[in-house]
Length: 200
Image (cartoon, rainbow, N blue to C red):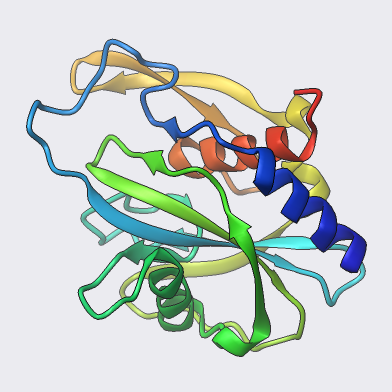
């Protein structure tokens, strides 16, 4: 998988544009003076199977932020975390039981600002050895995988909308089977896909 690692590393080196939940909604902004909370998520790509797959979770419906949504393993940067990478790896262990020694960090995508007040750093890594994934009770409802070639295909992304806080909000989606991948996760994945194909 060295060729894939080299391609991803090259893509990350030229990916410089930050993304946000406001890309498709320029009239919607956070309140002035809102302090964004740093967070790290792991865009983990499993390379030990028949084809590379992206590791994703379905969040618990009981959570305060983004309940029931599809997400990368990750969360806010704690005071004990050295940086967003440390936070992403710690959360991946807590949420899906991914040992940090199973990952090879390749770099990170530009930060993503969410409508819920987080500045998220997506950490891109290869997961090169199998592990027994396990959902953290109370936070993760399900752990699943999506083929890498599915999320790298720009043609699979759509813009949809719904009413949010009294106005129409637009967002990216990239559905896969029964999983409705949308919002911040879909936007970050689309940024990754665009970086991997410089023609986009």
